[in-house]
Length: 149
Image (tube, rainbow, N blue to C red; front, side):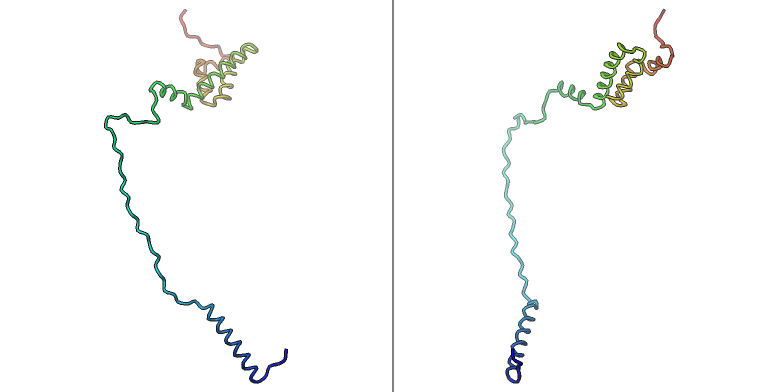
């Protein structure tokens, strides 16, 4: 491109200035009046209550007989579940170990109850067998029997 001189140069520079000014005006933020958005008015809807018969039996989704509720409450108690499981395991172990090695029955029963029913089951099995005195038989202590003659 040839070098501009004189009037041609002035016209070219004027066009460049005009472009720069237009560009700078475009980036400037124009002040615009902020218009509030229209808010919709909420209308209250009147709810009509259904007429109820005063003597009508009311529905209940959790109704059941009292006898069923009591039995279910006992069987669903987690502590009693552990007691029952522990005592069942102890009696089964006592039967099996009694056939094989009867001298180990007093210690095998609480251990199996502990393994299956946890500490609660073990305590229940020991108490059902006659307390801590029943375990002493394995260590050579004679078992005390209650009774008369």
